[in-house]
Image (cartoon, rainbow, N blue to C red; front, side, top):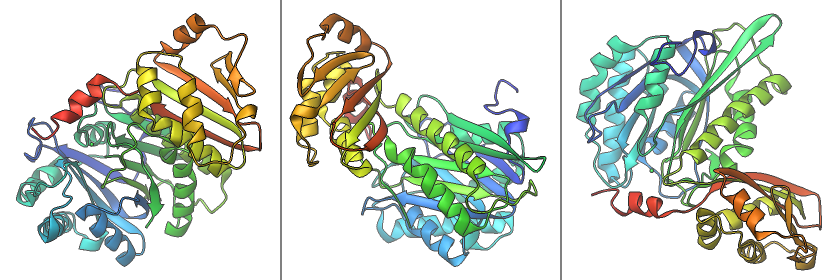
Length: 406
């Protein structure tokens, strides 16, 4: 593995080429246009933000997936501009970029999948992306360095690229899965079938689009739909899964090994997003159990994860567990307060809805001083569970977002 590569050669899914160039979208002058090209049209499945305000590339990308019956040849991602809230001009800019990519790489426009990330409400200079196509074409390579460049070019306020990979053996053949993503702020994905989180996962398995969609939904539900940094759901959130078939291995529905490997890749990427959150000094794993249902456990987790009082307590490593109780209480879940138990790591803080006689404030404070720690909550009234990852809320987060556009 070279210094510039985030992947080794045996981790790279076959059937794809990657490139990243400087198109002049980012004010920093860093690479800001990432492109992936499949050797032949790949099966595709995607999930998008539930935000009712949606960026032009989501509108166009969804339309293209329908028209192509789930086939994608080119993925074109620009960073530095979200191409959202730009009206008809935003749609035209997206279509112009797709048309140029289709011409450059010899495919129909509806086999181009666009994405954008960056500031909302600023016109996208599509002419810069169009002008960069020849350079992209020259740079395309089926190498770890190419995918690594792709991973770096999609970043905005991220401090580091985020990658994950897995391999499984099927009938003596190797199937590879590799994913890259970006996201550090405006992170509370609510992905439904039909700064921002963008996720691109590539596999060289052969999987029909409808089956691929089922795998993607299952993986997203336990990963990207289980994280939150600030509770804001972006206008551009996208998860795209592409299967090239270049391994020669056909994966049908219900393959446990592939499902597990995909979930592991997605969960790793999701946790990396949380760990790189804007201004984050603490990453918290919420372990909710004993809820009336899994859906109720998730509701409890989100209530806690989105509480400014809870998040600022974590920022100060303050073991103020009463804020957890309050967030549980207003979550909307039918609870019985006298049954609640809470642990900070191995130490029980709350028992039967009240302060534990063994609560040691110094020990609890020390536990919360770790960058990564867990909080376990047992509601004591059912079998519903949830695992959820979130963060603290710091002055640095405020600083980053107070002058994001200026």
